[in-house]
Image (cartoon, rainbow, N blue to C red; front, side, top):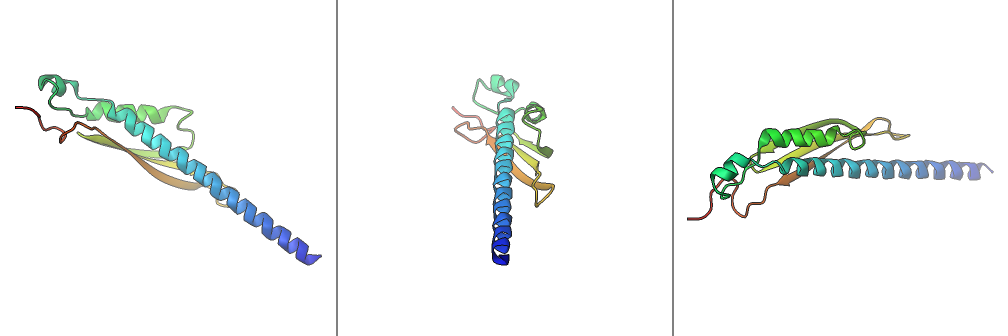
Length: 133
């Protein structure tokens, strides 16, 4: 009889551990998706003055607008419900967003997971370098 109880407790511990790992995986996937989405939202903000002045030959990112767009994406109450911290890095050629999310797990309380998403401008040439004659 004691063996049945021991095996049952062992099986329950394994099942709860596997559930914890799966929940952590879901949170990690969600954090990755949020980081990617925020980076893509920021990468949509082009420096129009440079683009127009070069007749479309030079494409650069408006870094201030890109950071603001990424932050606005993460500020959404539904999207950012698990986010505890984030960091946005911008360059003339892209945006990188680091997201730290919290997973509340029964056996590992207050577990934090960090993921980074990157979106780069594709210009067909080096960013900021004019093309043509």
